[in-house]
Length: 419
Image (cartoon, rainbow, N blue to C red; front, side):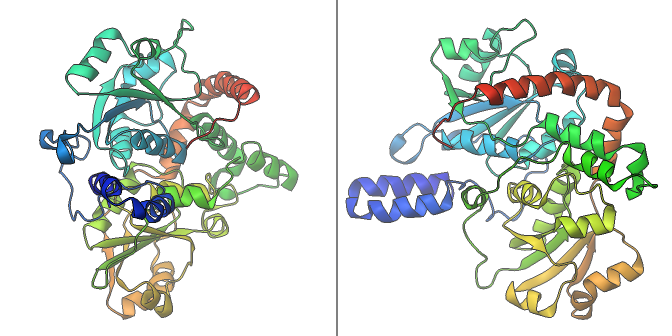
């Protein structure tokens, strides 16, 4: 069910009032996370620039489709970013996302961790995003705002309820507010890019590299892990909001891929896209925190199970997630989920040795339904973390400033309904 179908249902309420209760319940269960394109077997070769189709500008009955715009740096993409874009999409029919240029980020915040190409892959890989504008400005200038309204046919500019201030202290969205074309969404609490950088800096302590404590007191190691521990409180409603709300059809070819998916990055997006193209329904297994720690070391994962599961579930190529997937794939699991093909990428931070692979995938291999899939990118969680480690002094200074700002926001915040 997409937003076009959603409009048709609501239009049906006008003619069939007695269906209102049923439709309201259905909408609540689906959480309006309804723009996933799971029925499409393939996507454009340039996924970053998802085309705007002029003939979709008007919906049924000639009603104009509302186009909303939200921008950001989207550095170290996380489920908070995804939830912000989900909320933004709910305020319109089509969501256009502006990604701030590397130069603008350096000028206003310091060097980004991820390149523009990687950030484009992450944002365009989200199920709620319809179109992407690369190299957007950090501040909404009058000229750029007019371009949004006239060239991109934007109706409203969206931002979270946390303040976004320019270096001179002015509001970055003041112009949009002035002309009455601004709407606000609720910030997702419990996570931020600043928080994730803090987790990485703590975990990348030289004495803990490769998962070795080297005699370090256990309480010190515990402190390093808990200093930037996640404050995310998972709820069933959030999972429903991110879910597609439907299972595979009776004759669907179900493809299964599993992994840790820690610090969700462009490499994850590309391997999931490749896996999805091999079938009709992509089922993703996300390992438990304990499994990831056993395989990668005590300081991993950087993101806990529910955070990693939401990041995977937000990806447009994913249909369903097993939260806390088993290490070994059993015959019973294959039968239960009607799995047609099990795939594994060539780039992995969990051992790809012959013995380990034989242990994990013995059953699907014996059944002749296992396939090794060439990973489109060689980026890993460790390679991203190493970028931060290489510039740790810069990121430590930036984080100290951002952490103070975020602390002030949380101290002064009030309850806001919605989301």
